Length: 131
Image 1 (tube, helix red, strand yellow):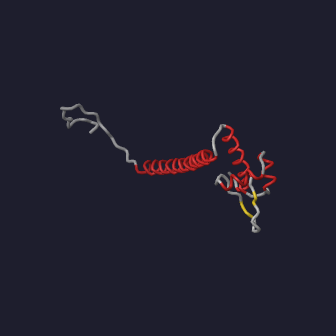
Image 2 (tube, one colour):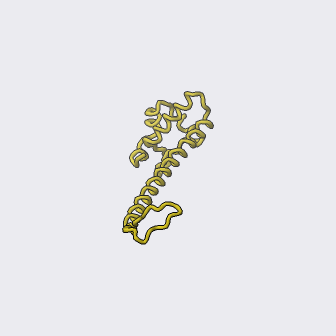
Image 3 (cartoon, one colour):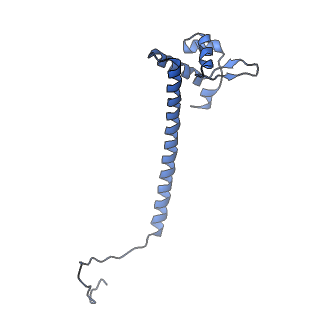
């Protein structure tokens, strides 16, 4: 989500129209903790594109028959999944960077080793040209 998506642009009537609901419904959702619009210095609500997307998601979940507490819980879990996926991706990138760094260090520290194959129980000959 970009900063543009979070920029509070819309008054409550416009946000309600964009989300296809009554302005009072937005106030109810705010009281129930489903939505937290920005406020102007005068205290008026301002809604962002991210808030509108959240309202549409609430509508989707409500259409399945879920109550507001269930919707709040699902949305909390969805936000946690997004956060955890981001954390996993950061850890994956850090791990790949560490592996690349270790591999590059290992290549520069390698010393050629000459190995001879010997069978168990045999003594190498003193006349062995490979010795």
